[in-house]
Amino acid sequence: MTPPLADALDGRLIVSCQAPPGDPMRHTDTLVRMTLAAQAGGAAAVRVNDPEVVAAAVAAADLPVIGLWKDGDSGVLITPTVRHALALVDAGAAVVAADATARPRPDGSTFADLVGAVHAAGALVMADVSTFDEGREAAARGADFVGTTLSGYVPGSPVQSAPDLDLVAGLAAAIDVPVIAEGRIATPEQAARALRAGALSVVVGTAITAPTALTRAFASALTP
Ligand SMILES: CC(=O)N[C@H](C=O)[C@@H](O)[C@H](O)[C@H](O)COP(=O)(O)O
Image (cartoon, rainbow, N blue to C red; front, side):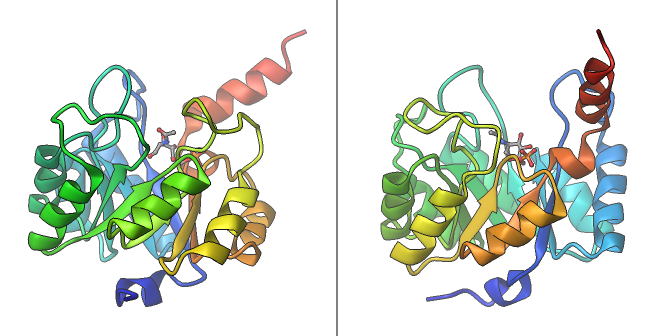
């Protein structure tokens, strides 16, 4: 069944308002300001890391918040356990984004366990996958959205500088669950192409909300 939230996301942009550890932008008020800027610019939703930032974004903005909680040093990092997922629901996330790759989760739970817990708590789940098989499996396990977030970041998926629009198209043709294109979408044209490939909506992070990474790209291009 398609959730009503899918109607609000259909054909629209989701902005990922995150900053990596150690980045000067990793500051709750700053990330809330990014969220408000995304809202002012016409985003349909935001994707936000950490329960504290999720709660602050939910309080400040009038947009659905897709929450994730990146934790750990290796393996499954994006919302690795049921405890992390439920903390995001408590913080007000409309959707919990979680790693749905085939790798073991640190609490021994399955992705289906996480889906069941989040649904029971009243929120939806976005499965972050790296391959076609993972996307199909996540849909079968009850994910409400499947995102191509982890393609290129997990062994077994193709490393490339462009977005993985083949994965978007393959999943969109094969599963009933809406597909969200995410990862390395760097221009408005690429975002539009992702929709034409079959995505319900498109997440853009670095190209909009990462001044440190963007500055680094310009600065290094000027270095002889
Ligand atoms: C792989 C991983 O951990 N991705 C994270 C997921 O939340 C974020 O670091 C990305 O910025 C996000 O997916 C948006 O992608 P891009 O910044 O390429 O537009």
